[in-house]
Length: 63
Image (cartoon, rainbow, N blue to C red):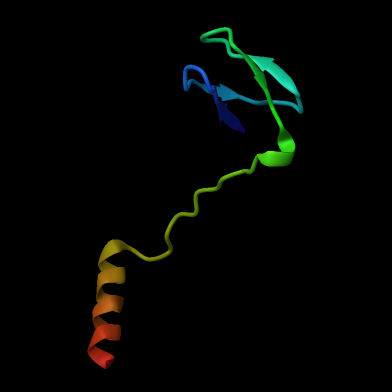
């Protein structure tokens, strides 16, 4: 999991449960409040762009 430094916006790898860490790019101290954080995920689409356009056209034609 990666986090972003609040000071310099660098992406920092987070490898273990830590409450405090130091940004390796700007040396700022970061406090990680895990009660107010969330994970984000990227879900790749199961339908191609062309397939989505075709499906939308079919749905609109039915109306």
